[in-house]
Amino acid sequence: MQMAKTAERRASEWLTAGGLRPTRQRLALAGLLVGDGKNRHFTAENLFSDAKTQDGGVALATVYNTLRAFCDAGLIREIMVDGSKSYFDTRTDDHPHFFWEDSAKLADAPADQLEIARLPKAPAGTEVSKIDVVIRLRRT
Image (tube, rainbow, N blue to C red):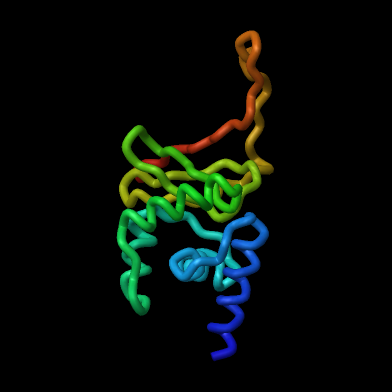
């Protein structure tokens, strides 16, 4: 009972920090994402599957719309692994990722081991807003 209250409190505080109104669906999804206090990588489909086990559940369209709201509020980051698959990360600071091609899993890579020596100049009238590094891995 205490763990459920802690997860609910974390979810509510997380939504408030992002300036989002804590609706029933947002609270349910936020609880799955940050209720245990750990960072996680997930897809919309993963979250939908987890949410189906909760009372009332949520529609897949609601999951997608809620994830977009969470991204827009800066609560999660979207990581494009290829043109057709988006992953999301509750850890929002800049850091690299490993992507295992055989299992389609995404994980944090050690940022202290990444060194980018030089970037190409941004075109006139633009600036680099962020750099996403996804290191694809294949088992040998």
